[in-house]
Length: 294
Image (tube, rainbow, N blue to C red; front, side, top):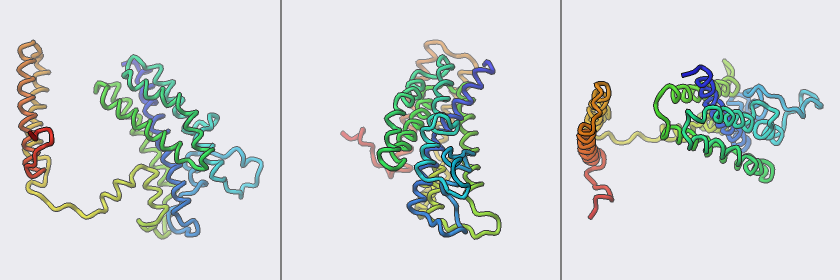
């Protein structure tokens, strides 16, 4: 692969993730405004000042004011959502992503291009949600759904080759960088009292990094253990692992004639049927799928 193509794919992934995480952060700070306790300096600090520090941005309207004046919600949301002049804004990130996707259209799938191009076409409608509804909810919901669509289509339609590896690496690098920025700015300084996990701003921080639902599920009571608690050694997993190993071996030795292909289809189909039965017996108590009910 040419280094230029790898570079474009890497930054395509980074820009899509940056747009998504910035939108999530806007949503998280908005929720912190509603749920947090700004009068409590000992907990998580997730404010509009904090979000500007996280993104390394400065509200242009503050140049004419004294430094002690804090940015308003409207100023910060506008700066980080639809301000094309701000390289860290959601719109600017998605514009760069579209440009990158256009340059590698012969490498990514057509559906991926359609997904990222649809964001470009829909941003004008999405920006209405920021101003007319008095809050960022409509805008961030649009961005989160569209970026999730892009990654979902990429996962379904791209070959798992070097191109996908660079795209995926870019997205993961950007996610890690953004989460670290949020933690450095929002968490209490050393020696200060840590926030309670039930604190509104702490929950908003989890939402800003996309981990709120996972946190709530992890905090729930653990399910009752069933027979064979280790899924890696369960019969369905072992059966499918054997099938994958067999397919990998056949691919490596170059057995790809028509007769062998039909044989592989028969083997895989039979093993999938057996694995489906194993899963039903092991995890669903033998209850049949609706598709099997006569």
